[in-house]
Structures are given as structure tokens and as C-alpha cells.
Length: 399
Image (cartoon, rainbow, N blue to C red; front, top):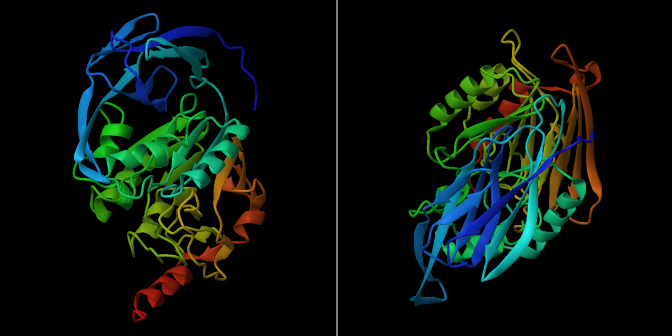
């Protein structure tokens, strides 16, 4: 990664006037060229204040919940979320949080450069249930110096249990999420009537369907559970068609292509053709707790569109599922892992790294005038054949 000469500017973040204790965070929800979104939780009802050449005061949202082990015990916390506006591209901003009556640690983050053609990021999912496994994955990510992280859903075991969000998700991400934005996708285990996912992880003014750019990458993150399949596919296609970035990624929780675990086929039979026509390069999901990378899918003859690579990355910490390898797979494993992407201009490298730090899958592809290299295209499989395999599985009687 190229190094930038960066100017460090101070940001002082104070939760309340009475030095409230910070109980979650800080957690970067989004970092762009000119602004960033930050979240934290405190034990005080007082306003939060962030100073960074200007000052923003937040009004926290009160969260009252019962502990599952003691329904008669009620806890109250206060959530703060705000945008830091007026930042400059390609600069490092330092900030510190004060709480508990004493000064806290100083953290920093870097805004996106306005002209970079390089990015390094991690993707993983299904980090729920076993925080120790999740933490090991995060520690490996920290060593890689990533620019951002995307989590493909199922962040906690039961989204309606507020007490799980700290130990299963926020705590394992300490040391990373204060300095690197973590873009979260909603999973089926994250659902709750109280909308805890949205309260904790969606920046002010946004929804759980969103997209962002970083260098040469455009990334769409979708919510399988708010819109219908047709509506979400339409949103994704419209978003990707409006982007001019050379590399286009799509993420949502339940896979459209998955030969193992749940055998999910979200959006069947339209998703594969729609995403090819929208020129997606990678579609990365979770839900099935395993790793699988499909060979690139060739679009139907005469329809145009891109050769799309589908990856299921559901090995972030939850219990693992059995695999069913097929001729359509480039790789498939029952293992805890994350995917590490490094893109510089027209060259993309992906390493899939397991919980022991070993590279278990490696991919290198390039583009010339928007077209993938011939060597990679020669490994492609027909979309029609893949869908026949999906159909045969859908019609198979349940055991």
C-alpha cells in the first residue's frame, strides 16, 4: 500500500458533562473523504460532545432491556451516533474519549484519499456465538492493515437479546473498529422487534441498504429482510448501473448460490442473471457457516453482462457446517476464516485466511478495458448448468 503524508488533527469526544463511562465503542460506522460516522454507548443520559475544529453535541437514545438470565433485572444504556463533517481527504484524525472521570486512550482514523487507486479490505460473516473465535479472526485482520471491513451478517446469536451485542460483536472488534470502519450487513439472527441492528449500526439518515466507494471499489450492502427479493435485486441493479468504479462488489446475508450448509438460493431464479447484467464482479454472502468460492459464472449466451464470482464467507466464529463440493467450485472448506482483498488499479488479489493465519485460497485476476483476463475466463462455468443444479436440489424431497 502506498504511504501518504498525513496531517493529524485533534478530535476530542466527551460523553456527557459528568464524564460518563463508555460502555461500547467508539465504533466507526463509515469513513469517507469528507466525513465519518461514529457510534458509542454510555451509561449516562447526558449529551455527548465531539470537538474537531467544530463541536457537535449528540442527544443519546435511551435503551432499556432485561437480562435473559434475570428477567426481573433491568439495565439502561444510552446510544450516541453522529456524523463528523467537514473533514479533509487523505488525512489522519486523532481523537480521544473521556469517561469515568479520567482521560481515555487516543485513537485515530484516516479519511479516504481523493485520488487513490488502491484499497485493502476484509470480508467475513457469521461471527456470532463464539467470541473467542471471532476475536482470533479480528486479530488477524488487524495485522493486515485493512482500510475497511464488511461483515456479511449474523453478528449475534439472538438479535433481540441486547446483552449479546457487546460480548459477541463489539468486544471482539476492539482495537480495529475504533480506527477502521466496519460496514455491517443484517443477518437473520440479528433481527429484533426493537431494531437493535439499526439503532447500533446504521449511521444517522441511512438505512440497512447502502453503498459506498473506496478507491477503485464500489460496494453495495443489501438487507435480505426489509425489501422483497424483487425489490432488493432492483435496488442493487440500479445502484451498480449508476457506478463507474472499475470493481463492483455486492454483499447480503443469504446466498443466491450455495452448494452446502443451508443450500441457500435467495432470489432464485432471477438473482444470478440480474447481477451479471448489472456488471457485478463479486457477490459475497454468509449464512452457511463454511467457505466456498465458485468458478466465475458465464452469463447466458446473448444476454451480455459480467462473469460474476460468488463467495460464501460464513466462517467468522459460529459453528461450522458440512460442505458438499461440486465441479462448479474453485474451492470449498469447512473452516473459520476471512477473505482479504487487495486491489490496485486493474489488478485484484484475494487471500482467504483461516483462523490459524494460513492462506487456504488464493486468487489473482486483472482487467483490461473492463474485461477480465482470459486465463480466469477460461475457468468459467455456464450459468444455465449451475441453475440446473440449483433446481435439482430445490426439487429434492426433504429427508
